[in-house]
Structure formats: structure tokens, C-alpha cells
Amino acid sequence: MPSSVMPMSKLGDGRQSPTALAATGLRKSYGDKTVLDGIDLNIPAGSVFALLGPNGAGKTTAVKILSTLITADGGRAEVAGHDLAADAQAVRAAIGVTGQFSAVDGLITGEENMLLMADLHHLSKREGRRVAAELLERFDLTEAAKKPAATYSGGMKRRLDIAMTLVGSPRIIFLDEPTTGLDPRSRHSMWGIIRELVTGGVTVFLTTQYLEEADELADRIAVLHDGRIAAEGSAEELKRIVPGGHVRLRFTDPAAYRSAASALHGATRDDDALALQLPSDGSQRALRSVLDRLDSAGIEADELTVHTPDLDDVFFALTGGTDIPHQPNQPEETVR
Ligand code: ADP
Image 1: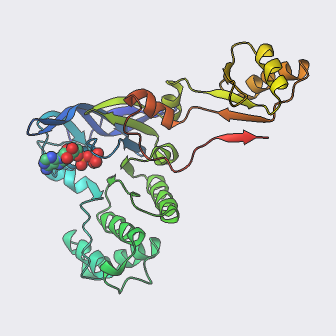
Image 2: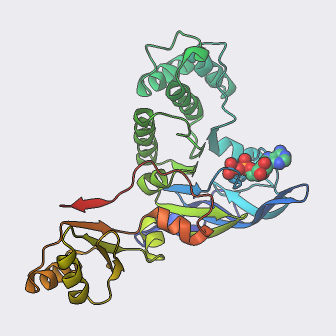
Image 3: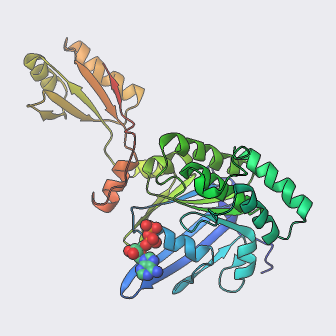
């Protein structure tokens, strides 16, 4: 197959898009430890793909294989239409990688790092200066451009790392845990940068331990567990595979609690907390039905909480509740 012809993938909304990355049966072991045990991936061009898993799950290993830094023990992959094993050079020309093995040199300035990158990509001196200035501006680094990169904050270093990657105009960018260790503000600014990259037509392969991050950014999410993809889909699809949606009603008056328990069939009782829990999809219609039943029994709850399944629930269901990644915010709504 000529390298310019790429197979097609289906986007979440059913439209077709060229495939940016396809892998089948990727395997990797270190000694007798199997890190990747047969990974299949299919990523449409122009989308954000998140590989989600806790520390040590094998995310970096997958990125290293797909970006040609190490070789797999088995399986095959095509990246930007080029076979990983047969045409690693062409793959390298089409991708950019940032992350734990960052290319930023702390001893030289941000601008010098950028110019070095421009040299590596054989840009002329003039073009190199133009591209460097433009990217430093875009990533809000113009003011810090003449300072050694070692003096930059974590967020600035990551922005510089991405700016350096973009000098080569990659079509696919691997971002290995782009926000691990960043404060919430820098994390949000990084999310903005990632969204902009995709708007510009780049495909983003992201690894993260943050459920919230995958939920925010990714068109498709794959959950890596025990060396395999335990589930894959959009955040909505993944949330649909777990139960866990419920409405919780709390009472202060024991008599009201008892009446509600008999009015609402199928509710799980928590007698100590005077709380009832009902399975529910959290829709307006379902909530109205619960409230109507309470109204016609003349009962008023003191607190009503809607819990819609989130990626936490998915992760619990898939991994048996162990190794749950850190989730900064619980998307739970309480109506009083
Ligand atoms: P993650 O990025 O999800 O945190 P990694 O891919 O870095 O996970 O690591 C997965 C597992 O592989 C870990 O148990 C790690 O210790 C092991 N591992 C990674 N690289 C090597 C290596 N070069 N030699 C031996 N073991 C390794």
C-alpha cells in the first residue's frame, strides 16, 4: 500500500475520518513482567485519544513503542500511514512527542531551545527565528524567552516542550501525562492548548491518570488494566456500561423517612442516615416521578442528591475497585 493512502476510521458521531494510528496485538515484557499483553488501537485523524490508567499500567511503554523509541515484542502498528517496524523514519517525521522524556534543555534559554529545534528540522536561520518567535508568543513564553529554561515553572516547561514539538509541524502528537504535577490553573491552560492543537487538525494521543482529564478532552478513551484495554469508547459510552446512577433522599424527621420508604418501592434504606437510595438515570422525567410520588404522599425530603455514573464508577467496575486514579472533582449535584 502506498504510504500516502490511509485506511478510514469511524468518528464518535458516525462520520468517517482517515486513521491516524492503528495497532494490533502490541506486546511488551520486561524480564518476566508482561507490561502490554496485546493492545489494539484505532484512532481517527483529528481526534483526541486518551489512554487512561494508574501509575505503572504501561502508558509510557505504549507511547515509547508507538513513537519508535523502543520496539514491541509482538504486534504491529501503522502511524500516520507508515508501518512502525518497516518505516520508523517516516513515522518519526510525522509525529511529535512530549512528556517524561522531555527535550527541554534547562541550561539554555527557551528561545535557544526553540532555535535548536528549528536547526534540527533544517529550517533556514530566518525561518527558524520566525517560527520560534511565533510559537513562543502563542504559548505565552515571549517574556521568559531569554531566561534559562531551568528557571521556568512546571507549566512553562511543558508549554515550551509542546512549542518545541510544533516546530516540526507534526500531524500526530503524543502527550505523555501532560498535566501530572501541575497546579489546577496550569492544568486548565494545558487543556486549552490541547483543544487548540486539535482544532488545528492535529491528532492527539494523550496518556493520563486523571479520569476528569480524559472526560474533558478525549473523543475516545481506552482504559489500560493488567496490560490490556479493559474498555474503550467515548466517555458517554463508557459511563453507560456501568450502573451506579441513583437518586438519594435524606430526611431529618424519622416519621417522614418511614413514610417515604413505604411510598417509594424499590428504594434501598439507610436507617442510620435516614436516607433512601433509588436507582435512576437522573433524567428530568425520572426525577419528576420520584417527586410526584413524594408529593402525593405529602412528604418532603430535606435533601435530594442526583448521582450520575462518572468515569470513577467505570474504573471501579473495570478494575475491581483497586488502583483508582486520582479524581480532583466529584461531579455530584446536590439540590436542597
Ligand atoms: P505508566 O506510564 O502507565 O506509569 P510505564 O509504561 O512507565 O507505566 O511502566 C509500566 C511497567 O513497566 C512498570 O511496572 C515499570 O516498572 C515497567 N518498566 C517500564 N520500563 C521499564 C524498563 N526499561 N525496564 C524494566 N521495567 C520497566
